[in-house]
Length: 118
Image (cartoon, rainbow, N blue to C red; front, side, top):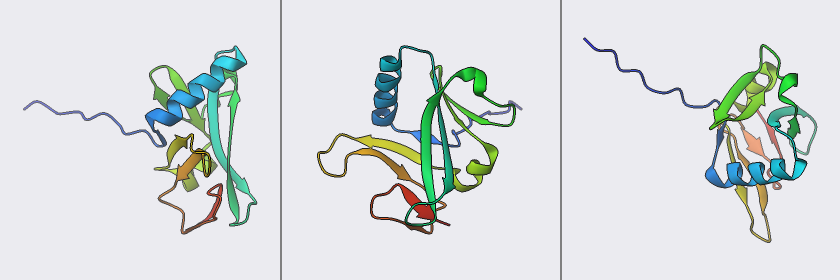
């Protein structure tokens, strides 16, 4: 019997719009960088999302790595407890535009969408 292997769904998903925008921002940096996504204490709902570019040499052994055609999105293990299944989207709408986080683990989110509670 042949075993069917299904590809692993990324722990953090990026929409095409988000990926396109992140790649455009990275190109302006002029370096081959990865995107680190995580959480920290704070924000109006208790925890807020953080994301920034960093050099791939900073990826730690215990980081979760999601590969998008050679572009790496990384997340530390502690943050992954709060953002597993997150969908990162981007909208260029004049009102409410920017990066948007859809987090299945959030029990409550603030109006700006940049912080949440579990």
